[in-house]
Amino acid sequence: MNLFKAHFVHPYTQVPLIVYFNESDGHVTFEKDQEVLDILMKMEKKIGKDRKFLRDLHRTSHMCKTQYPVASFQDVFDFLEGLGVDKEDLTFQQLYVH
Image (cartoon, rainbow, N blue to C red; front, side, top):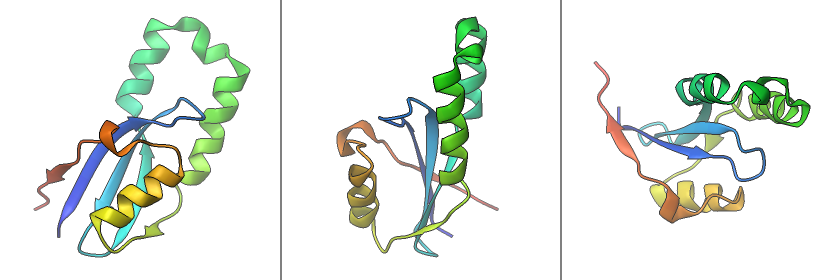
């Protein structure tokens, strides 16, 4: 399995996310970056009570429940650029799964 991941902040919701690209299966998935969210909540106590941020956090949950079909890294970058994420802001790392 060829699995890659990159961290980014969603440009519209400002929610930190992780994007996974499974090159073997040809799909992209998203996950909230819980480590970064936990740090934000500790550093910015008010953010946990900010209704807009909480609403955006909830809206982002829907995005994380779906696999999106892609055939190549170029398709991944095109898909993410459609979401407003700049290709230059992404650094994919390969994950080794046993």
